[in-house]
Length: 548
Image 1 (cartoon, rainbow, N blue to C red):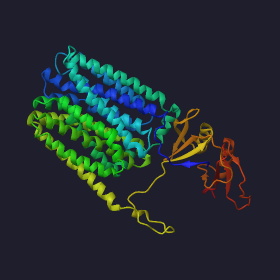
Image 2 (image 1 turned 135 degrees about the horizontal axis):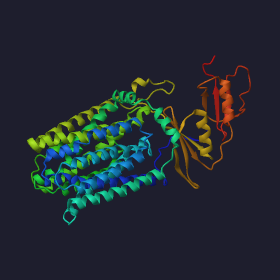
Image 3 (image 1 turned 90 degrees about the vertical axis):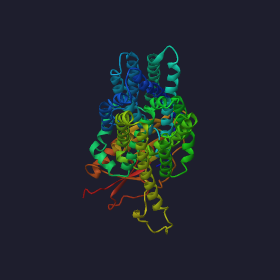
Image 4 (image 1 turned 60 degrees about the horizontal axis):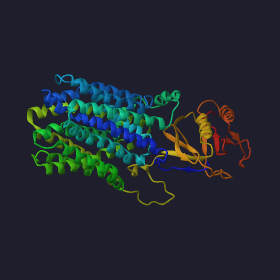
């Protein structure tokens, strides 16, 4: 074809708009959620304790898992961006309900169900939206941007909430502010939907139907290398929920300022994900995870001995943020990158299912441990979890290192794939053309593939570009004003009839706009192929299959 590239699709100037809107929406809804992290203090004010708060959080387990199972089952038909906007709206509703509770902590169970389910969906759907806008090489970086935005909101929320508590607004007024902020986030996320590619509704169900079944995809994922990284992600959830959801109570019991934790922890996470993470891209991702989780495990143990020392509290919180902030998005990207292409649409929601299931279920255990035994046993459990993560990461890194680089071989000897730990795969085929919509439509009719993206390329005449997907491959038709080169292609596609005879398929291709051409191949009776050209002159062949 005219020109073929396998370039990394870093967002162009136009496609940065939905990326930025997504980050703004994530920041806003996370800030609203962060203000609701003051709920444990409100529960205590209403006569409850850590065990009661753990029950409130864990009440969302079943509805959250049902929602995430649906998102896993129909990852494309449900349109993750609209699911994300709806979930952000439910965070606003939960904050509004919290503002109405006055007589006791039991009504807050409804808040726990609503906000827990909504946040589980947000944490799962947001990476799905971002993942659709980036490529493998950029996924870890942009996941870092996204989770950095979320962490900024989670960090600012409690600090802003604490400031509002010192005003006449109190808890109830603070929760109303959280509702307003979350509604603003909904508007930003709707903007993402308005500025991203549009897919025809009739093709959405077909795209989900073309995926492996949920049971089949789950079996494939759990039998692959991705399974161990899903364990790592699940253990991250336990650490995250224990260290953030109960931090206000831990600080109050140790005469510490929880604002110190949220500010230093969040600042460290943001520094990692927006600055340090890009520098870490030069290192093996598994080494980055292994070192980070090892530091994280040591840091968690330090919380058991900090006492009421504010300086040590700030330092420990910052190191925890640095290690956790670097390791989690890298591990999330590893889950996707080691998965087979056919199950990638399901692996992210499955990871979200595991992460949020642990996030919502583990607080029940945390509340029981703290209420009956104190915080030291809790930190011991978290250290064990961190040790398991470190072991998985170091073993994975050692295996990759043991495989070593490809040794030099004679160019005429094909190396055995058994000697390699990994092999490359084709991510996408990029075709330069003067009319992407026309050419994409032709090849869509020829191959029967689905349009999966549109207008992802910035051109002098506006947004352009069409992406087709099928059989584990993507074809990007990109606009160019350069004329097609004359002469024979240096390479071309060979097609075979999927159904019917070669002659029937030839007639169909000609009806779709293909043209038979002569590039000097002649017309001998022994020839078993036809040479054709698409609407822009790109040469391809229709070869005979196994019909005879």
